[in-house]
Length: 266
Image (cartoon, rainbow, N blue to C red; front, side, top):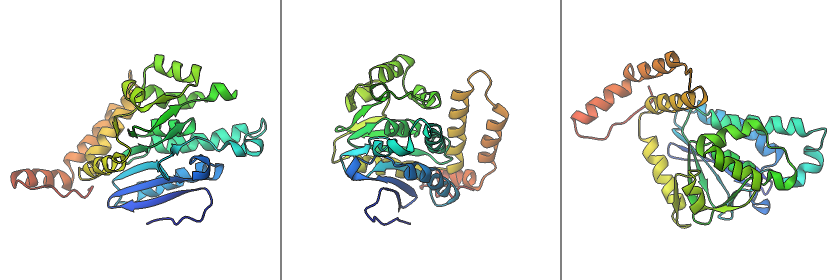
């Protein structure tokens, strides 16, 4: 499936094999998210989760200038006033939670500006690949915005508390090399190579057993969120489902026959 462009800010979808690409398409504003785009994101994630053919979800922005500059501040006079800020934050939070809790593996393909809510979306993804051109910042303190504590949790899953404090206290910009050093991104690539690297990684993941990946994803999330008391019984059931699956049989057969397995997620 693919959504056509009509010039209006939107969240486009593109399918490339077993990979669903969600593309922030608002290039005039560095792919900033309008309220409508935030609201669309949970629906797009749900569609990807429900589509058996989708193995991996990639988030990116149109063009090479920006992954996303965050929220579209041109809407703030109407959509994020004192009276409407709580509702705007609710829509934001639903978008972030949809990405963070997505049942399919998620990858952020980052070129250019990755600011504010854009950086938060990237942090909510499982993996982040960046172009050497990428620039990052959480400028809330420079705009007088109180950063929602619910959005700090994804940051703390990928960077240290000291780094999170630095990002939030200073609001300064940092480049891809520093993002790699602090652990915010998994790898950095030349501008002309970033999309090829993302495509290759997504393809590698998509070729593996979906139930195995789901068990690993849920286990990591649960242990991070509840380190002292993870729901091991629920996680054990996911592991047991792998051993009871047709894919487990296929994996063993393929190994013995010295061929690549063809996994079906069942």
